[in-house]
Length: 333
View (cartoon, rainbow, N blue to C red):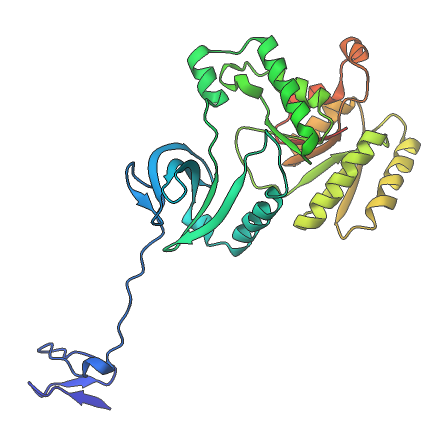
């Protein structure tokens, strides 16, 4: 069936609104469906502009993988706060927004001078945003760029503060090279080393480049700290549905069988695909070889099993691994 143009009598397809020959409307305005113009989510804001009808942009104070953060004046309550604009590609993931909602709900229950308060999670014309407490001051990266490498004493002081504050947290996340990464010569940063030695909480030591984790490795020796690492690895892999490889570096084959059986007895209660491996040699070297040669991208390990004086004489597995690892390390005490 076709529609004849009332003006030029040209035959047009049934689903056509305008004549293909003379552009005369073929249907009345009431029959034509109006398509609304949808405004694309915004990724950045300009100084002086107003967002969501109340937040006047003062300046951009940071940006990262999740989006941009601005210092703004909340014109409704007459206070300066921080506004985070979430990237559209991240905001469209419903699970991510749900996670932000959970974080907001949990953060409202925490009151501590070292915890930044989150106020609200909102949406403005397709743009997801978070409002939070604005804390003035200079970040460590800017300070290092202005003054150069931090003295060891200053780094240790910062590490002590982080360890003290970690008592209200479940996990501490730090960079592999510490605060002086730009000046690093390949050694573990003094701040990172201090934190991994002193922190009472598990520590996630991240490498500079991000990579999606797919093949975690657990270095297990049957010790109490390795058992704590095994529990973290099991929970992590179970939640993310990842396979897990358990490695034991043995002195004797009979001992290896017993240690790995201990791990198997514990891990069988989790819905995780586990591979058990044993080898002989120096533990720290074999762990690094496994990480590099078999493309493991996360290591779970118990932290510092010996006293510092012993490690100074015979060397420490944890410190060696942290200095040479090609991937992030999850440390348990």
